Length: 294
Image (cartoon, rainbow, N blue to C red; front, side, top):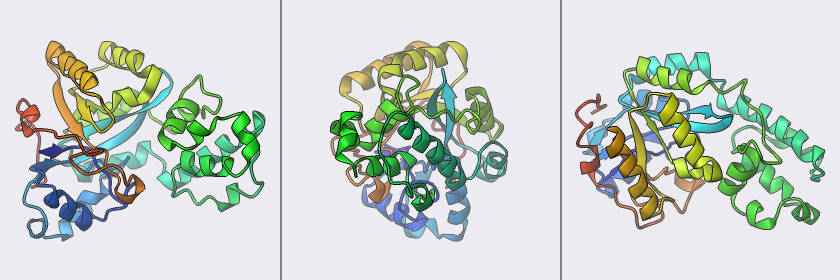
């Protein structure tokens, strides 16, 4: 089994570089890629680790970059990157995460007030930028029961849905414009290529009602190398549809859990919610075309 989508505490996960190696070894994963958001610093940290003491599989240096398509915030995955070069170049395109999160939170707070959501006046001063902005504001909104008249409780109890439906959806009432902090798709994809990597589209169905038009737009407009066909929340039918697209367009296939450690305690490495199993054979067409960390 493989897992090509996971995060450590170098972005928004909780595992250290050693903890994640121990955890992937326990799952008997043959190939992994650690894909932290907008940073590949975990690979520099691993230079000081005797990896074989913890994990005996292969590691593809990876990253997940924030970008946008049709004004919707999305992500791309880069595999086989020169991680040292990437860590230098991302500084030019991306603001440090905590700084960016604070700006996003300020804009989100104003949006909430504008549509009548009640929030504590000091909530911004309590936000340190480390927690997901959506999670922080979601918890603040839940403090006042009257807010359920504006945002139903079913959305307030699901951070991912709250983010995708309300914050990152241009039609959503809490859509936060962050174009000034997120590079265009071409810029992000070219960054991956400049670092010798392959560009993949991850978790496309996480974009809810925007999924089809985003994927159609990307396939029509940009050059990509592959699609993440297996993902924690995907149904069998969704995976089959993406596999068919990859075969029709000669694109590579990947898959991953999007593991975040304790930040997403119900998502397990290699297995997602428990039923997922991604065979190494889906990589047959490209696993020898990338540079491995080990």
